Length: 341
Ligand SMILES: [Zn+2]
Image (tube, rainbow, N blue to C red):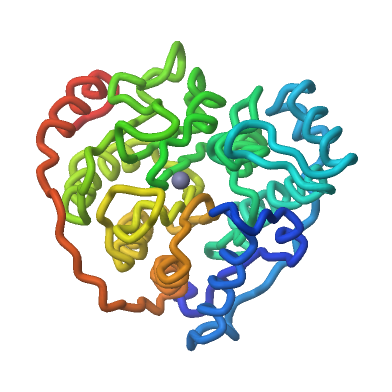
């Protein structure tokens, strides 16, 4: 039997992702460069297996997203930069760049499911979790995690998408809302963009009980989210028994993020990985939000260090609100018919 030390962690990255860039937008190319710089300083950098992404196939893209939405991105991408809503921009060649991001996430997920890697990190842009089947929005063009979750679930795998971005992943939730082969779990700030993710949103039809939402008020901290893990997220994950966990890794839930309002410490991002590893070590993280360039590198390394059995600690103690009882009680009431809680 192999120990974790002999297992591979893959990382998928390409400079091509940074063709998607509008410098004064918070979701810009500097984010990936800051994270790569932080990575190069670590003792485990040389042990990582870097993978070059390939574009997701159009066939798979059309299975998840509407033709109208795809063709809109394709059209803008051919002609040059344009904003498709107040906060989402499309750059020249973004049809290729966004397919490259989705393709990168897909490759490492397939590798981890096959056992070619123990776990992986998809260092990709643009992000994906706000993109629904019919609409690109919230800095997201295509739903990177959702596209590969769709493919792998069709092959008989149960997939958990866990989303710790400060914003609710409305796009991912809506794609799988009526399905029980892909579970969506999220905690997020509420009220906040995009306005979805209430406790009572638990799925529809066959999907009832397979969408799990923990909306948190301003300032909730590591201790609050830790209780959610103990009482809701982990017990449900143990019963669901996923073959793969895809983490929508948004670091805007860190306390210093300018678009956030939760109070998580950098160290807690690795801690969340540790908790899930005990249940299913096949984990792929895919980058979503996170805009504080002083901190996203540390949040990222906290997760990657944990994935590589080389946990790192950062000097980042912060306390906020740990009172989570009301949220947990109402979640148990909504989900108790579907899971032992
Ligand atoms: Zn976000």
